[in-house]
Amino acid sequence: MKKIGVLTSGGDSPGMNAAVRAAVRKGLYLGMEVYGIQRGYEGLLDGEIEKLQRHSVGDILQRGGTVLRTARSERFRTDEGQEHAVRMLETFGIEGLVVIGGDGSLAGGLELSKRGIRVMGVPGTIDNDLGYTDYTIGFDTAVNTVLSLISNIRDTSSAHERTTIIEVMGRNCGDIALHAGLGGGADVILVPEVAADLNEVCRKVIRGQQSGKLHSIIVKAEGVGISTQELTELIEDRTGRETRAVVPGYIQRGGTPSARDRMLASLTATKAVELLYDDTDSRAVGICGNEIVAYELEKALGMKREFDRKLYELADVLA
Ligand code: F6P
Image (cartoon, rainbow, N blue to C red):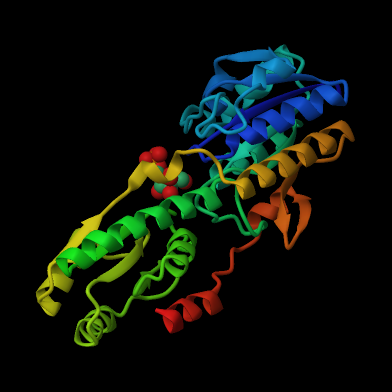
């Protein structure tokens, strides 16, 4: 394969730029032409495609966001959109793609691969919700961002003797909440994978108060059924302690990527380009243990993510 394209798609995540850099530089190293596609599948449909050089990706390794920009494309979801995308790739002579994004983006890649384009998926999402890989690019940075927020919130919560609920992202996956909650010593962690017992949540807060704790920290994943506002009111009402909610939102998606995310991005994107170079059929690249893995794309997308119950129980023991 001589000409490849690279795009970032869906919600941005810290480390996407490191992945773009690695894909471009490895491709050039192997003697391929590498094209950057702007704004994900949206830009592909509009032909926003430009040949990249080594210097095109200079000084981006440490930056959050994505220099290629990103989008969630409605047009690409249709058959016509996908066929148009294939024609656009043919127009530019692009034979294979590196798609950096989450499950929706990789599912889009699968549609292209069914139409004859070789697609290598690189897991770029803060959510850590892909079944085939232990970690996704951006997750570690997002967890660290939340950890630093928890530290700040502890100070003010203690000063005011409050309960604070921190609502974190992750869609239907509780991993950001679990890892940040465990690392940040949260009193309660609420995730979509485990049904919340609100009476038990209130009992924990009350027991904490009775044992002299100055504050309670609750980390709640956004995918948990009850709204954060409703939960805040319920806890304040039942425990009699002032309760506040903090929703860091997109702060979790920005910032300079952690060392782990830079490594994961560099290793997975490099592998994706090697697979294209070898004319391998479409794959999703990830990490399992300390090994970089590449599963057949359709199979990878069908793999179910297992929630780490043991870690969840440990967080409860340590709280
Ligand atoms: O998938 C990443 C993510 O940040 C989720 O955690 C969140 O639910 C969603 O994207 C927000 O999407 P948008 O950027 O469209 O508001």
